[in-house]
Length: 210
Image (tube, rainbow, N blue to C red):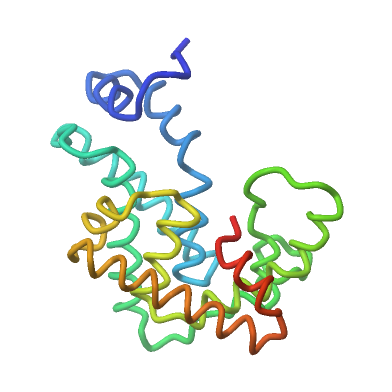
C-alpha cells in the first residue's frame, strides 16, 4: 500500500520506475480538480472529458522525461492548460456551450445546468449548501464572462490553490502579470455578479467560491 503522505513528486518517480499504483494514486488525487479546471475553462463537458484524458495520456508519455524540478501540479496544470488553448484554437469556429445551458445528451442526462453539475468543493451546512446551489449558476456565468487569460488565473488560484509564482510558470507570463490578471478577474466577477443581482457583500464573499 502506498502511504498517503507520499508527495506527488515521489509518486511520479515511482511511476517512472514502473509502479502503476503510483500513477493511480496521482489520478485519484488530481482528477477532479484538473477536470473542474478544464471544464470551467472550456465550458463544454464532453470536450473537457476528452481533454482530461489527453492530459493524463501526456503525463504517461512524458513520465520518462519528467524531472522533479517543479511541483507535479505545476506540470499537470500546464499540460491541461496548453491542451485547452490548442483545442480552443482548433475549434474557434464553434460557439462554446454556456454553463447555463442544459447538459447535452450523453452527459448527465438530467437537464441540469452544466454549472450545477460541477462537484461541490468542501463541506457545507444544508442551508449553506442550498444557497450555494442557487448561487453556483450565477458564479459560473460570471466566470464565463471573463477574458480567458483572467479566467484561467482565477481558476488556478481560487479553485486549485496554486501559488501565483507557479501560475506564472503554468501560463508563461511574469508573476506580476498574473497578479494583475487576478485583480482584474476579481473586479470583473464582482461587476458581473452585481449585474446578475448578487449584492455587493455576497459578491465580495463568493468570488472566491470553491
